[in-house]
Length: 98
Image (cartoon, rainbow, N blue to C red):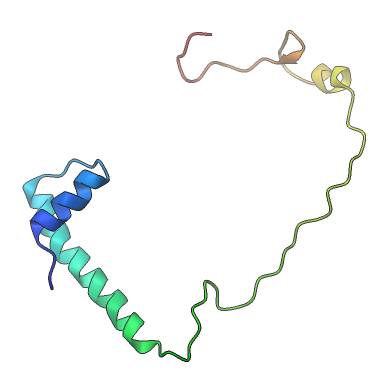
């Protein structure tokens, strides 16, 4: 069943995306092609094929969390270009008032 422009408009509304009528018409065709491709892949996998997220098994590569002493704040801040109230001073980037 092909997707209609109203189906795509409903999805866009759920995602809070504004779309023009031309975009809705274009995307309805594109999404229909994508859904058909996914359906053909789903049909190829038989009941004997277990669903997987990766082709190869993954192993955890995290190291153990070991508590170790850190550098003294004074020596770290000594290398900083600007310090304020015992912290790194960085330029304001979001335009928010403090």
